Each structure stands twice: as structure tokens, then as C-alpha cells.
Length: 269
Image (cartoon, rainbow, N blue to C red; front, side, top):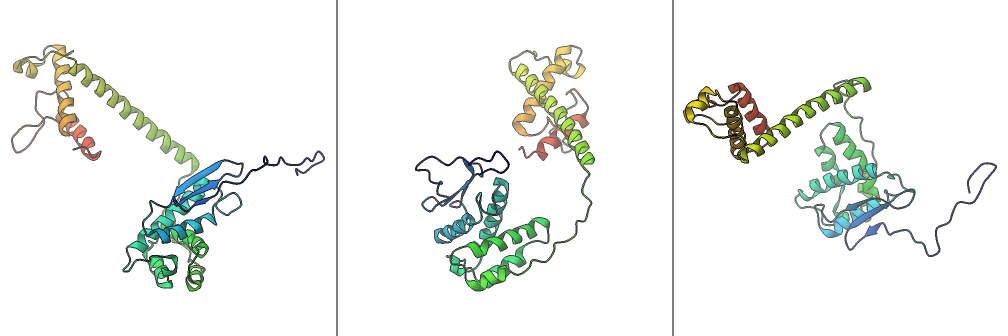
């Protein structure tokens, strides 16, 4: 019932309504309902590392924390929890022997997990999340739950001051300008290459390629250089040991060398 002078009863769900089951043990998926109805998010535990009995228990523990009437209500909060659990399971399966069930997660496993976390904000966040989640996992030994309940020391103080909102907006604006300029160059290069493939720039003789007295010669050489760059990941180079940019291509050698560095940095080969 809503408050105030004009109070009225809240609408009831239709007859026969049942909340969607959160944990699907067959598929090892957890469906998190939204506070206003519908589905907030779905998390697949079958893709996480570990044997099925352990994953089923981990998913059940997650279900006890995720939902509109649980501590983890928002999709982003649930996603952070899911990622921390994934990190924990990656650590667990690398142990010798790895735990096969929740009962195998001993105090030694928890202690090793704590020691494995880096002294970073993310490392401490993973500990805080798993500390809250682990006691909810069915089958966890009482001693392990008690060890997880112990206080996590405060993390290191930030080494650098955070940007102010104004500084952050300036950084975003500068990054956007750089991106737009790069996108414009890329689109222009792709269009030029398309025209080159369509034969809009006639090929001239070798002497003309060096003299470049005709306007279309530079257009042809630019297209040829772009084609080489796309196919090989490098600009047209000499065959000798110093591997310099061929002199007949328009633009400075430094321009083409910078283009090659950008492509190599992007992971092209």
C-alpha cells in the first residue's frame, strides 16, 4: 500500500504468477530478476573452470546474494560478483589437487587465495566479494566460512590523485578529437584504395613515377602504397639492408614509417 493521504493498494501480480526460478541446475545458469519485474541479468556458470558439482554449489551461493531482495540487486554489482568468483575458480583449479566439491574448499584454499591476490584495488575487491559469497555456498566447511569472515586489511592508499570531473571531461574531449581525426583518415584511405582498385588512377611509367609531373601519378602511388600496407602490414620498402621507404612514393618517408608503426602497434601482420 502506498503512503500519503491518497493511499491505495499496490497492484497484485496476476493469478497463477510465480517468480522465475533463479537457479537452473541443468544449465548452471542464474537468472537475476529485476526490482520492477523482468530480468536484470543472466549468468552462466557452466563456462567457468571447475567440475560440475563445484560449479553448482558456486552458482547456488551466487543466487543467495543476487536478486531484488538480496544485497546484489543491480546487474553491474552481480557482474562484479561473477567476475570475482571466476577469478577464485581459476585459482582453485590450478591447485594440486584442485577442489572437486565445495567441501574441498578448506581454510588452506582460502588462505592461498588471499595470498595470491595482488595488492591492488581490484585484488582487494575480489577478496571482499568472495569473502561475502563463500559462506553462502552450500557445503562450505564451517572453518572455511569462519576464516573468510575475518577482516580484510585496508588496501594501499592511491599513489596518484584522481582527475577532477573537469579534467576528465577535457581528457574525453581530447580523446574524441583524436579518434575522429584518425577515423577521418582511415575512411579517406579506404575510399582512395577503393578508387585505386577500380582503376581511377592510371599507372604511369617508372620515370613519371619518380618525377610525378601528372596529378594522377601521386594518386596511383598512394593507392599502391595503401594496398601494400593492407596486404603485408608494412609500407613499400627497399630490398637492401637499411629497408627504407621507396623514394618514389608521395609524402615524406617519415609519414609512411609512422603509418607502418601504427599498423604494427594495432597488431596487424
